Image 1 (cartoon, rainbow, N blue to C red):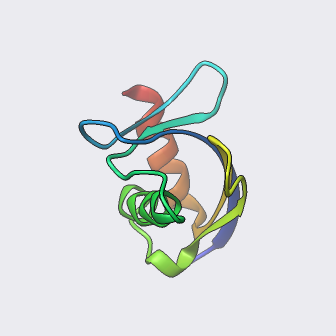
Image 2 (image 1 turned 90 degrees about the vertical axis):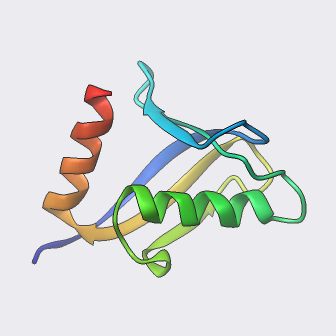
Amino acid sequence: MNIAVMIISVLVKTHAKSDSIVIGNDHVLHARIRALPVEGKANAYLCSYLSDVFHVPRSSVRLVSGTRSRLKRIEIAADATALREVIDRLKEA
């Protein structure tokens, strides 16, 4: 297994009716999450949601910057091939 660390930019819209994620034309992940931006709960929810999307443990997803911003930088550590497969799948959606 070839572990890679990827840092992605994520533009977050909170308080959505349902969770979803797509890659925009700007090569940024656009995430809609149900959580409210209260006391870091949306950030924790986003990291948990991304761990599900990328099929990695929650401990492999870390908020690097953007704690109080809609645009966040997220670090994901996982198998390089698996990361690429998820990104390719999101591009097709």
